[in-house]
Image (cartoon, rainbow over all chains, first blue to last red; front, side):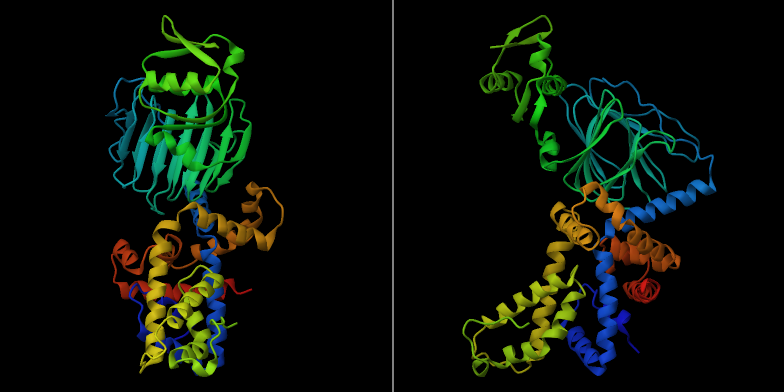
Length: 315
Length: 181
């Protein structure tokens, strides 16, 4: 005999039809208790719907605690990646590994280079210029170490294999989502475009607290470990993938540092005060000469040739 | 509450509209099986009403019930298609969900803490899922939490679709009992 649970499950069929509807209606009408039971079951169903990601994160956390309790001496998986400034993107195995442990693969991009890689699980990673990261896929985990740089992660759902990114002493943990991690000179920024992302200190004794980020949130951790949670438009942060750098009040020095990762001719700022000038705007990264021309039109600056490349001066 | 049609008198209503008002609650509960909350189901039933109110009043409807449920099933499938894949993981939907969650528990708290406040209930829900028998728990997780269809879940687990429906059914029964407040 069918009950509320049976009906709710049946109505989840992909090809649910009028026949299901008519029979459902007949069942509802057969006894007042049916409607009460169905409504109660539905409330539970909707409650799960309102926090699927939180529950998934919690399940993953619980499972991890189980694992840690069972194997307290589990080998750390963070491996140092190879040279950061390789001229071209390449994939090389840097850790031969044990027979049972798959080796980590390292991917790196050079100056002005962006690269999209697809992992065996279908997840995709966009690497910004001068970025180095290593990936290790095992049966129970998907582990990325971002040595230096910036990357956008499109993670496929696989609850059995949590996806983690280790960067700047933190662990970013997800089930399936899209987010950007930027780790430069010890500073970390994690921006979430979809799903939920957990950022926690890499070890339980390390300073800092855990954050659960939702779309539109960015967690910034500076060199001193000070955390700041901001509301952002994730598409702006992720814009570099399509060659657009979006800034809101970013110091000119940081903008220049970004451009110097994109172009061969290095830009220098003569005056530290000039470097603090806040920049707001969109920079389309195409040709360096064009970019510089637009910048000098937009800002009270001019550029002159220098030994290394270009020198920025006040107008 | 029944939506009011544009200056339409009950006597003028066709069999279809009459049947709609009689069956409104059943139709709503039918639709709610696939929406994320009752409010969305209300939106869908409004859509259903608008669709059938727009139909020719003279249309000869021999089986109004069947037609209503056919329209409702189509609406439901379209709704699932448009929300499940794209916006399930997209920002807007999540933000709404968060507002919903926090609305019950707290007011005027910083965004970062919302999760912490609702956490106790989330922990209860997760524990209830973790306590399910392995296969049942896996089916529930993939289908309900990861948003896979019953067919995709069946493929992922290497069992039949029918088996998935049975797992889900048992999981619902188990969770309802465990989480009853």
